[in-house]
Length: 219
Image 1 (tube, rainbow, N blue to C red):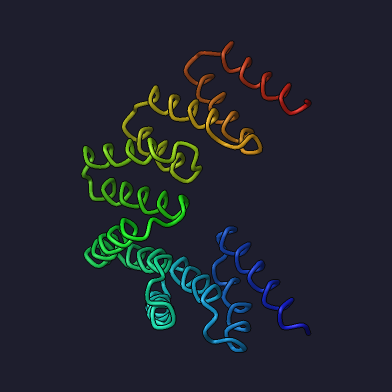
Image 2: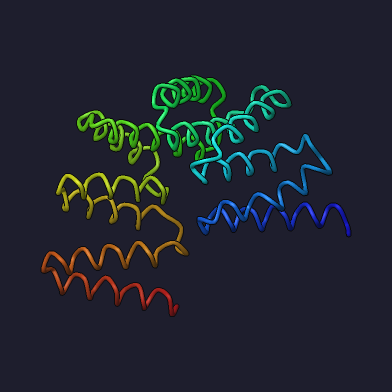
């Protein structure tokens, strides 16, 4: 088999498995890639993420993170699987330490918006799970101001404000996300907003929103 094709296919299979919440299925194709190329950072990052997502293979996740840093000491992305592994293992102090280190590196390196949004949102969730409600709200508001159309940020913020019975704030978040985000992502956001409007008795607005979405889709 063509090694390049095998690598691309293995990465794709692993990504799909992780997104489908079937982390164990992501590991074998990544093992095959790393048997051929032990210093493949992309495969190591994915395998570390898969190990962390299993919630039980924590030591293996951390081992892959350490190997990534031996290969690429400035790899900020490696903090994601490390933090997720610590959180899965309820090792909150180590997760907090890794988050703080990641934050300092992000300030220095200014990585892409997606990684910054992930860090910002994770910090907010960490505050929420630590029952620091005021701090969590402040962090979510900062994340939404900086990343109003990031779907992961929006989803986490909705969970938070819903848990606080702040339904009007959740509506505002969705309305802004619809304005700011890419058109192909409108469908899920519109449906979510329409459902929330209907649950609040605002049926005409809900129907209007769905109809406008249908008209936009037919253009």
